[in-house]
Amino acid sequence: MKREIHNAMNAPQPRGGYSQAVAIEDFRRVLFVSGQIPTASDDVLPAGFEAQARQVWLNIDAQLKAAGMGKADIVKITTYLADRHHATANREIRSDYLGSLAPAMTVVIAGIFDEAWLLEVEVTAAQ
Image (tube, rainbow, N blue to C red):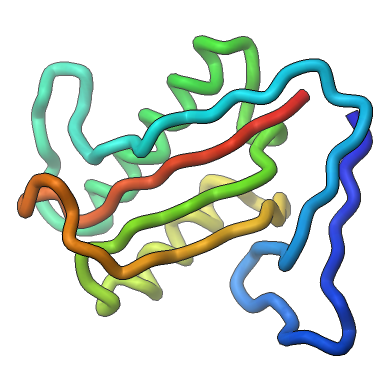
């Protein structure tokens, strides 16, 4: 698959490990991962934002692996945060997971389905 990152010089530059646009060509498959919630497979909800965010990325990783993909295949991320005060921790934990990958990204502050969940993250992957 061919991946091109686009960050137009006459528009705001990305801050925090993402790209303004990602073009893909010659891909075979696209995977749309539903919003992953911060509970483990046994329905345990970790305490605190950092633990919940790490659980969400573990869940995303599990979904990608189940489809024969990995984090390198992520082209778009949408994150829903229950509170904007979690933005910095969210960025740091996401960066820990992604490393140097810079997919297209959107972060939305929103009411989440279960008030105990502090975030939900969906991804699109392609290979």
